Amino acid sequence: MIAEGRPEVRLRSRDKIKNRGVYGGIATLLFHWVQENKTETWRFEPSLPQPSPVQTVETADSDGSQLLTISPGDLTPATGLLRGNWVGTFMAPAVHIDVPWGADIWIFLFRSPWFPLKLSVAKGNLMVAHKQSTATAVLTQSTGGALSASLSSSGGDIRNASLVMKRKIGQFTSEEPICSVEAGVVSQTWAPITRQFDLCLVTSSSMSMSELAVIAKGLGADTSKGFLGPGTIQGDFVLCDGPLTQYSLGLRGDLGFLRHEEDSSDASLAW
Image (tube, rainbow, N blue to C red):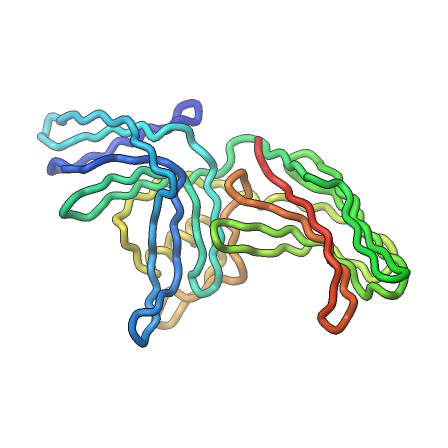
């Protein structure tokens, strides 16, 4: 249940859940490969970097089952980044039920933004220069979190100028090209990635790659079927843009021979 952005989770169990504590916060769902002896193993590792105790109410239903009502606090839109080999991370509000001598219970609340996003850019103008050449990017914030960019380059010392949006989600980064020009002026509009989803995921501290593939596909990932496994993701899958993602805009001037000049600006998406 969600009212005014504040969720309420009701967990029903046939047997009493003997927990050591119930905690809430923004969770990190890490999917990665780890070295074990001479082999690599894919692993899912959930964590709450800044856990806070949450309010719970325990009642008994008429059939004798336990009903645990949890109020985790304010709700924040989820974000995430997955790569083709099922490596990446999700970030979402969560509840962690610490069960001693048993399997912990994790409740992840995946919800897309339910409000208009607003983009903020620290610097409205980016510029790089080399010898007699300059490249500039004029950045203008638009409605709906969009960005209008005018990119220009003059002179022959900068072979190509490009503008990219860089995302950082947890320990993973991804770059999205916005526009590029060799000489002259080009204009382009960047818009945040938006999807519609509302998912309450209840799981233990373990998850298989096949289970993640089902979840990712349901959230909008473009996946290919595998012969003996879950297949792969086509390109980088960004779950949704929003306030949990770190952004920066980068203007790069290519000088050739792996040399370049770069200017950047931090950015953020909020409501």
